[in-house]
Image 1 (cartoon, rainbow, N blue to C red):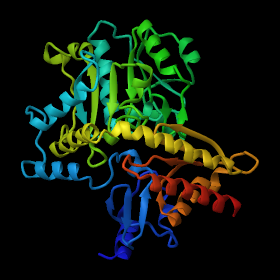
Image 2: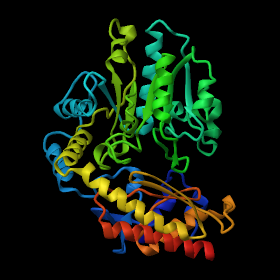
Image 3: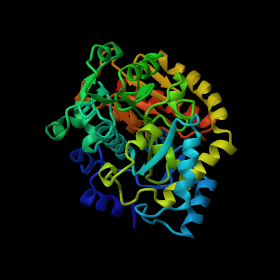
Length: 426
């Protein structure tokens, strides 16, 4: 199939996420057809190479076609691709569950429930928390609390927690009533006797434009939850597996949650797989008669190929000393981002580990009109400089794979600098 045929079929039949198809299907729009990748690079059907500047929507950790993950998936294919986890078990899932639990202090997060993606990992935690209180003698605890600007996924339960109207507002009539607060001060003023759980993206909110939480806020939240007997759910779908410089973001404030939702980087960016980890206290509340069973699951729960990829990814962390190497790259990243601050069209730059959000602004410091889609234009211009990434409104996100070289990282930052200058001055 030629590239033109691929694009024609796409525009005729495909429906892309978070995409206005009036723009996508316009005759003048030519979508990139990505055909291959290696390391931090992706290649299109015309043979052009690009740095994968957002790790294929925040998922890819170690680069494309990493030989260890490739080999693990191929070896699993020689055995079996998928079998049901309902009524059966298998080695890859049990090994992965044990390795995920081993990443935490002993007797803290001890149970692993596998699902498909970040949204379902949050759904699992919500259902577990709700049923936990029903079976623990406090059925009045039915309310969930989330934060303004939050994004926890697009399934109905997860979207109920969302604090971004553009993503979730149209579906509010079908969501359960979640309470949103903007800060710890607002949370502390809230009555807690009916609260089942608080949900937060630790250290940094992703879809809100890479917004950083104040230092110490997560630890304060854990103390509040303990004082009011409220469960704490951490959404580390984006931040998990090294993105903030530690294996999990919550480690930086010494916090252990009651639940943690993991996805995106779990398989190194290879296959859809998610995990919700819970404490033994939570798990114990589900033991007993059939009425205590958690009636929730997915057809592809604990898919063997996904588990094999995830195990290989964790092995890479150990064998290639990824977190140690990443610390040096984070420091270099900080230096390179500082070079953008001289631009009159760069507003705030927010960095958390190997995550950066770069605000594009008018020379006056004001936002560009939303309908100008300035952030999208900057990212489109960046392709000409060999970089692929996506904006969150007028915040350009840079979140590359950990394998990116120093030269490639410099190229990515320079591509953003040049693209902002071209678009904003034009």
